[in-house]
Image 1 (cartoon, rainbow, N blue to C red):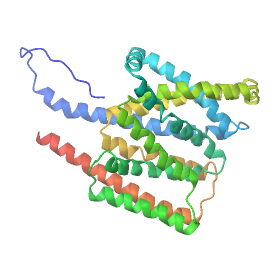
Image 2 (cartoon, one colour; image 1 turned 30 degrees about the vertical axis):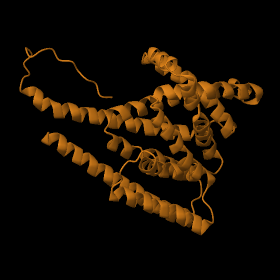
Image 3 (cartoon, rainbow, N blue to C red; image 1 turned 135 degrees about the vertical axis):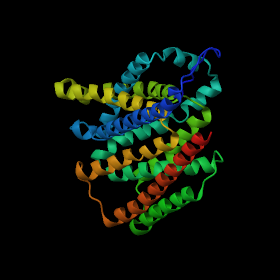
Image 4 (tube, rainbow, N blue to C red; image 1 turned 45 degrees about the vertical axis):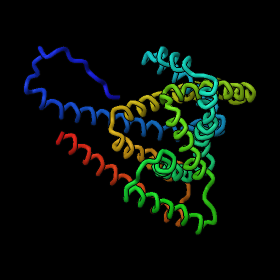
Length: 325
C-alpha cells in the first residue's frame, strides 16, 4: 500500500543524505514484501496438507471447519487492523443491485476453497496444482479479452505454450482433469468480477465468508459426527483452531505483500504456491505422476517461465524509468 506523506511548507530543508536513503528505503520495502509473500505461500502450502493431518475427517468436513474457523480468524484480523469502520462504511454504501453483484461470485469462491481442502486426500492434488499453475495465465488472457489490456509477445507466447500443454494432455489422455479445469476456468471469473466491481479484497472476503460460514456451521451441526471427533481430541481441537489462525495469517500476509510489492514481483512470487502444491502432492501425499502429465506440466512450466521473464523485464524497465525521472 502506498502511503503518502504530507510535508509542511518550504521552511523544511531536506539534507542531502535523504536522496541516498530513498533507494535504501525502497530496497528495504522490497525485501519486506518478498518475505511476506514467501510466508504467505508457505502457509498456503501448510493449509494444503491440513486435510491429510485431520484424518479421519473427510475433505468436505475439513472444508466446513475451515470456513467457520476462517471467519473467526478474519474477524480477529479486522479487529487488529481496526478495519470495522471501513467495513461498515463499505457495506452501508451498497445499494440492492450492488449487493446482488457482490454476492454473485461467492459460490465460485466456496467451490474453490472446498476443492483446495478436498483434493489432497482424494487423488486430485496434482491436477489441482496444475490448475493453479494455469490460473495466472488465464488471468492475463482475461485481462486481454475482458479488460482490453495489451499483451506483448512474451505474454502471448506464454499463453500459447501453456495452451499447448493442456492440448497435449487432452490429446494423450483423452481428457483434462475436472479439477484443473475448475480452478483455471472459474477462479478468474471470481477475481474478474471483484476487480470490475472495485471491491476491496478484505471486505469482499469478509462478505463471502459471512455467507459461507453459517451454511458450513449448519452442515457441521447436522452431521455431528465431525463435531464429536474434533471435540473429543485435544489434538484435533488445536489443529482446527490452527486452521483458522493460519488461514487468517496467510490472507493477511498475502494481501499485505500485494500492497507492498510491485505487481510484477508479486505476480512472479505467486507461482511459488502451485510449485509448492505440486511438490507436496508428490513427495508428501505420494500421488502418482505419469508421462503424459509430466509432458503437459513441462509445457505449462515453460509458459510460466516466460511469464516470469516478462515480469522481470517489466520490473527492470520500470526501475530504469524511475531512475531517469
